[in-house]
Amino acid sequence: MPITVSMTVNGKAVTGEIEPRTLLVQFIRENLKLTGTHVGCDTSQCGACVVHIDGTSVKSCTTLAVQVDGADVHTIESLADGDTLHPMQEAFRENHGLQCGFCTPGMVMSAVDLVKENPDPSEQEIREWLEGNLCRCTGYHNIVKSIKAGAAAMRG
Amino acid sequence: MNTSQYEAPGSVDEAVALLANAKGNARVLAGGTDLLVQIRMGMADPALIVDIKKISEMTTVTAENGGFRIGAAVSGAELNENAAVKSMWPGIVEAMDLIGSTQIQGRCTLAGNLCNASPAADSVPAMIAADMTCTIAGPNGRREASVGSIATSPGKTSLADGEIVVSLFVPAQNATGGDAYLRFIPRTEMDIAVVGVGVNLTLDGNGVCTAARVSLGAVAPTALLVDDAAKALIGTKVDDAAMDNLAAAASAACNPINDKRGTIEFRTKVAGVIARRTAAIALERARSN
Ligand SMILES: Cc1cc2nc3c(=O)[nH]c(=O)nc-3n(C[C@H](O)[C@H](O)[C@H](O)COP(=O)(O)OP(=O)(O)OC[C@H]3O[C@@H](n4cnc5c(N)ncnc54)[C@H](O)[C@@H]3O)c2cc1C
Ligand code: FES
Ligand code: FES
Image 1: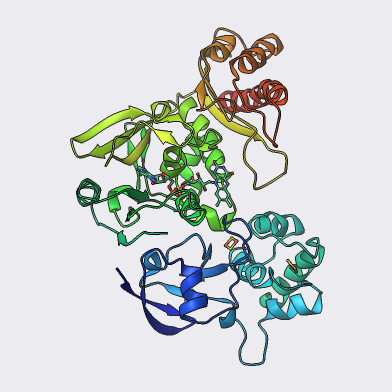
Image 2 (image 1 turned 180 degrees about the vertical axis):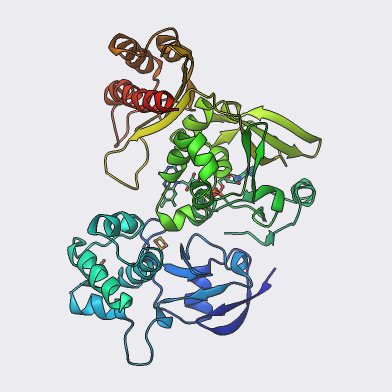
């Protein structure tokens, strides 16, 4: 029995007719065609699907779309301003914080949430914060470096 | 996945009525960090999902009889931010905080951890050590039960069809009591406990232990309350000899499985080691209270 959900995604009001079992990540990728949010696992472990719901980072595969009815959702697509990358995205680019790039949207969204809570995180704090984001390529070293640089850039 | 109905009622009575009238199987959704994964893996396929996060009685923490009543839908992150609970029962809050990453913490609940009935659930030994109880609502009204009586075997609970855990109650900590929880995992983060130990103990004015509860997780089909381990501490100053007896009693109580995270022999030995370390932290906390 399809039901209607409405929410704000990246500043735009959106509505969809979905099955109640639809995960938020499916709604974002399949209904809204915002494919920057990735799916890397089926056990809520990898963090490739991290988005912001009402300002905090959440794994969009661990949430039903109907649960966020009325919420304010931001995906990786909301960060850049036209062709100008967000400082955190720019820092990942500058510091080789990605290789294949599959984990990157989730890493960046988690990192932006971290910096909001803690504007100047230490290497240890960054590593701890990233416990819910897995990367199979980089060995994390350059991701940590990127987030340090991105945090500095965001402090301005 | 066949889930065809999702409801987010505003009261416990409505939630109970929805479950009672459900055609086919129905499941309660708290944080969904177990349930949604189980649905995706094909291990659960409820026709109806009842989301409890919109029920105010279930989303608040209130002071009660010197202790706290914790709503079943309160998230790990909210618990961690509650300074009063954290200072009285640091072990419970730390155990809960071990669950998942920050994104999981924003959703997962103590009651979900309990009702999922995993033998390795981290918060359960800490809750048993603190002698916590829960209030359950169902078609026949409300009842109270001890946290230790909920899980009956891996994935199974003593909740009857249509029953919901409404809240969990943690009593006042003794003025000179302290609690702690530690687990052993093969990695440093994000893993399932090979052994988890909750200890809660009280000292008298002379530093002699007058009461203790020791609970082990992940070493038997459900979390255990180990009386012999508590007896090893009671009446002592929690010195080395008492700690040796505690470790031996903890190891003796184990009835674990062999799996990729640890053999029976390893889990049995580590249970003693972790029990000792956990008791040392609880002791330190009791002394400084
Ligand atoms: C990446 C990741 C890491 C994890 N790490 C850990 C870990 O380190 N340690 C650990 O112990 N667990 C871990 N978990 C498992 C899970 O997060 C916890 O068990 C969590 O506490 C479950 O709570 P929830 O609110 O999300 O439960 P839900 O998924 O909402 O519910 C779990 C079960 O309990 C039932 N239920 C929930 N609330 C009630 C209620 N009030 N009354 C009756 N039944 C109810 C549901 O129907 C379901 O069967 C992890 C999970 C993930 C995805
Ligand atoms: S897809 Fe892996 S955590 Fe969501
Ligand atoms: S860059 Fe490939 S998974 Fe992280």
